[in-house]
Image (cartoon, rainbow, N blue to C red; front, side):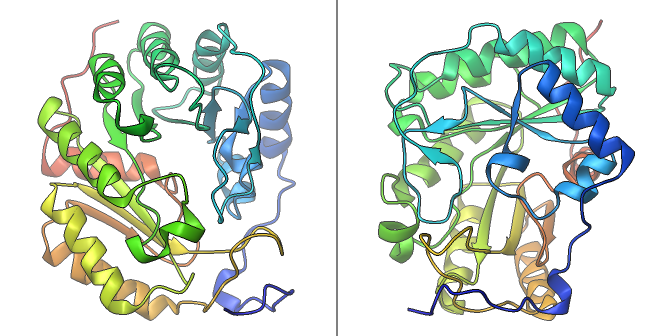
Length: 299
């Protein structure tokens, strides 16, 4: 396995540094409402660009995850409490930002009977009430295969249901040791059958997977009817995480985009700096143009 020591990034991985006035304003808003974002907790390289445009991916259910994925910078441990007021504060932040599209994700809360599905549903409902014109995308955990929990989330009416497979199955023991590749595919398949909301998934490239494995995983997602796909470069958060094996050239990302579109995906976001919620609002517009999303709600 490649060394995880400090490596010089190729020029195509240079991201915009934080510091824009909108970045400062958003950081203050999140602090004021005591909210977490995956942008900060997962060390997203696009935080400078996205926050300068007043967009963020809200992370509910706290900032401590019960899983220890080899690629993720979010803290691992046993959460001590559940914030029942979080859904309304997330909706308030979305209203103050005036977002047309909101992305909401979470840590894993495997110690909860429903994995946090109830809080997801309450958050979706709160956004619908306060911001009826805002489309809502949820990036959910696998709920350990609890399909009643999945139904709880879907019944709240998200506009897009996202669940990332992250990497091919061979790398799960190091990348996602507490997850199951087949379980994630089943979740996406069940979600597509249970709700009109388009399903979405994503993968990180450069952690040691082969091109054949990438192609097979993209095919697997197509086979379960996934509508939206995101592909981005894996960047190791620290020397304690799975190391980067290679930096994938933008031309290869373009090739994978063409491959996935040829399999029938409605939209594919593929590039070195792409993350699951990167340009999510524009994805909604393109998917809506191809196939209407669930009907818009009345105020």
